[in-house]
Image 1 (cartoon, rainbow, N blue to C red):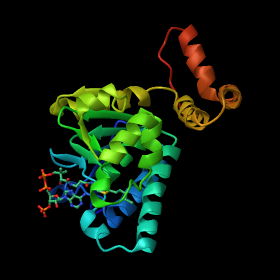
Image 2 (cartoon, helix red, strand yellow):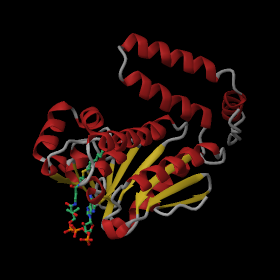
Image 3 (cartoon, helix red, strand yellow):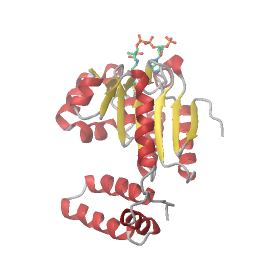
Image 4 (spheres, protein in one colour):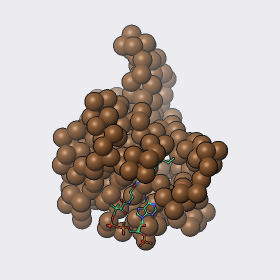
Length: 260
Ligand code: HXC
């Protein structure tokens, strides 16, 4: 299904969603967030897709935030609905059984930073800038930023970024652990595709279980997290892919995983 503000392409088991409103720096209005939800659901239904990349159109922005022109006239009920929609998008990305990669090609501000943080892995171009500048508008992050930024960079740094609204460059974001690597702009997408393709070649059931256990375990006491881990570990031994992966190792040949 074609979308107005989101481009979707799939190659070699890797889907790429591009937020495509470059004139407003890919700002997220309601229509775009709704389309992103549908696009993520479409990816979830396509069993040939093994990894998802999210990026922004143009060379300036990943996403410069939620659409301020649209939000300017919202009253509280509409703001709540908008925030719920953004939370739904984050939940959809986190519950996808495949890894998601944010390729941050420029500004990732407000809802843009929040969208990147709902992805499993974040890579940035040298031109990227991150921030939660909502206090400049006398609002706060509303697409999961208060919780996800604190989990990503720690509560102390999250407080500083959210209270000051300061932007940080890609190198700073890398020091904070928000970004895995900083690349020259032209190498960002090729690098993300390489990572995605590497993941796409692994046992998909294992990758999916790893994603699930990492996410669920993060908020649990160690004993409870370990209980989830051993259940998932044991479950994988009921799959054909586990037999195939171990047989292939012992027979010194590449494995052929089928996702069963
Ligand atoms: C709507 C936006 C926008 C946004 C940029 N534009 N960001 N439109 N919403 N978030 C538009 C501008 O109005 C302008 O349109 C065009 O994009 C180019 O932007 P400029 O400002 O001219 O570019 P530049 O001078 O290079 O500055 C880039 C910038 C700045 C630093 C990124 O645009 C900026 O500060 N944007 C807002 C960032 C922000 O506050 N984000 C958080 C939003 S709140 P025209 O028509 O004039 O060319 C949020 C809450 C999330 O995200 C939770 C919601 C529930």
